Length: 411
Image (cartoon, rainbow, N blue to C red):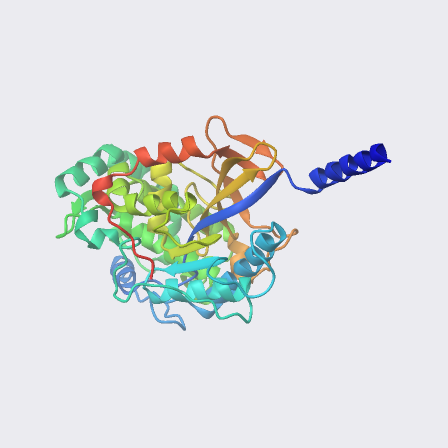
């Protein structure tokens, strides 16, 4: 009898071990870009001056999240909510603060994007979107606060070193430049022929005069495609295929390379964000005690953060390092139930150009585009690329400039 009971117990334990997954998701820290918006007021001024013509007005105010952009983000949020419930990170029903905490940059487009993500993930639930009272959040607008300021001379030298021969860069990008010219210029557009030069704003910000405006044009057209603007309102009928948008995106990559992706700039302005990611992954007492921390930010924040951790990606249909509307950089903490060790999974995800334009629901047949971060000692598993936890966080901490970090209060 005793042997029978012991055998039954061992069999039960074996079944329990088999039923328990090898890896369990414990924590998510996600930094999302806002959804589709029209050009900002500043972008509109510069692109209209360069092309000598008025660009189409959208239904939404310049710089604000559109209704179409909201719907695309709802699609993403719906998939994420279902995905995390299937993995056991979230429970069914409306969440409390222990399930999700959302903080958005104070601009309308980021706060509205956060609402759209929550509507998709938790329909019918009243989940708070936290944001600072003023217009400047140290996590997302660090360049406007003293701790995030760069030295003007050092910044210029860093950008110049990264740029190298600007004339050669301008020549290499001529295929994209000429395609853009044909799409947006009604007349000659002499702006397109001017040599690119390093310039500094009154605040000391270094930029590439010429390239920065062309990048704004390419971004505006990409956003217009994603918005499902009629072709007549998208480059005046000169762009009718997603591949034409893809061909312009190397201009955005080049502009990222010489701005937010410059290590000196990224370290000064994104150390506070990387510090927040590391602290939240470690369940620091000063951070929200939640399973899913969702920070809704800007492409510049994601670009600088990825520079600090050494992550480069290229998704189908996009140029290297592109950060589409509604895309996100995701950090996941997993537990190996066999060894009780912690592991990290890091990836970048986005919807395709056509999925954004057509509002395609995200499912197994139409998954998010995704690329995973990896380094030495990472391993491929059934749940993705899992990397060492402690050594990775320690390595990331070496990239943080502690002089560019202040305590973060979560409202």
